Amino acid sequence: MKRLTVDAMNRLSDEELMRHIANDRHAAFDTLYSRYAKRAGGFFLRMLAYDREKAEDLVQELFVRVWTNRNTFKAGRSFRTWLYAMAYNLCKNEYRQETVHLAYSEECLKRGEETVEPFDKLESDERYRCLRRAIQALPHEQRDAFLLHYDEELTIAEVSRITDTPEGTVKSRVYAALDIIRKEMDKLK
Amino acid sequence: MNDNELKRKELENTDILELLHEMRNKENNSFATRECRPYAKRKRSLISPYWLVAASMIGFVVGIAVPKGMQDVHDDALAQERNGNCAVSIDGNSLGKSIALGDVNLKLLRSR
Image (cartoon, rainbow over all chains, first blue to last red; front, side, top):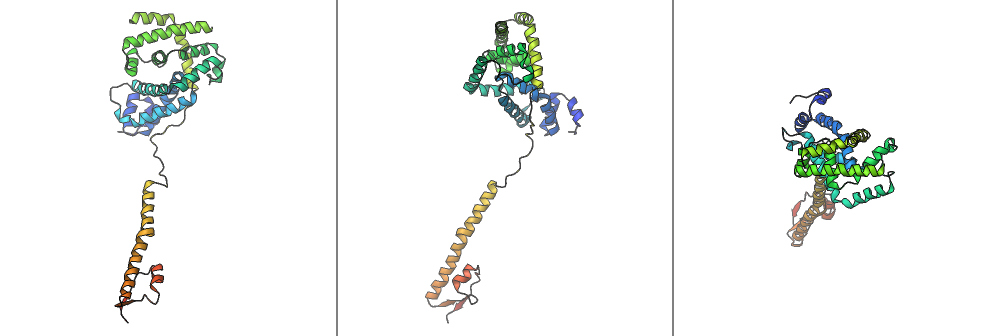
């Protein structure tokens, strides 16, 4: 396989980059990492009650998995679905040690936004704060479906595959999540 | 749940979805990433298992096998001398001293 410049790498699709990564091309991995690391980080933040340290660790873990499983990625598959399936599994592992996160989340919600907010710039924005609180108040299943579908823009079918849940259930969950968020935001206004 | 119901709900909550995307973009951009190079080979530690195995083998040879062998040579020579059919002389040194010096080039001489 021909060696490509960084510019050429940037023009490749995720799936093409995965082909290069499967041939141990480090530059392809770096390109994919710079493309997705921040996104994955933001996703972990929202999934795990804004535990920033945990989110940073999970981004590392996620991309180590991308590298170690590079040969199991099948051609014709969507990289995003594959990546978010791994990210979702990492979140599920965290949910298993749920006490820590739930306690953190509950406490944050009670105490207000000071500890939840890692972003000073956004702190003043009341609308974001309301939305964050509303999302964190959702049950896990609804939050997962809601964030994967609306935040990461995966289709209902993709969310269904990732969460191993029937499509109808995914739709009901995002529907219910929208309802709850609307009510919470109205309450918090 | 059919698609139309969900579409209707989304339309009712367009403001929330727009806000979510706005917030997501800001949070993602301000997320600090660390360097990630899982392909980098780890530096081999000086204390590798190979070194430990080699060191213990050297320890065994120096600490047990060689002294045991030397002791056997010593015992054998003394036994022969006791039997009276040979004498031991190693280049003018006593047997024990020669062994301590590592000189195992024993010369077994016939009885005086």
